[in-house]
Length: 184
Image (cartoon, rainbow, N blue to C red; front, side, top):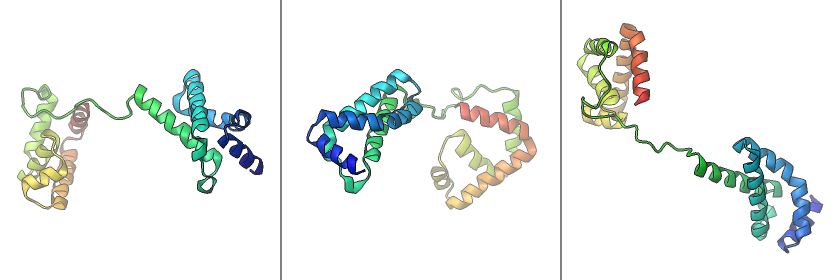
């Protein structure tokens, strides 16, 4: 560590030899982190190079009292890699998979859907309404409980009870419905 402090000070003074020695010491560990994230050798090598270019450019911002040098370099590498992955492969869903309001746009009606619909009609009225609001109209529990004008906990118990009854009455078709809902 004493040797690192001397090299880090030289790096802050823009000594290329210090960068080279620190690169030799830490590049293997940093590369292994990057390669696990991107799973592509060429991209990992480029990200490793970018990481150490940032270390060179931002060396004066390293503060030993806030953490080890390796941790600082690791965070730079991780952030660069995550930014790269976000640009290449979106980590956040951007497509619109909202539930359709009109029955014409809804899922095609087949025999299993009609059977499930028959099972739903056997539920008590407040259970039917809760299932309809959440699973067919796409409302959140918070929105649906407000529409039904009942406390949120009561609404959630309606949904839980309705699903329990449906599971008993129609286990097989419920799984089909859940698959259909997940596809939407």
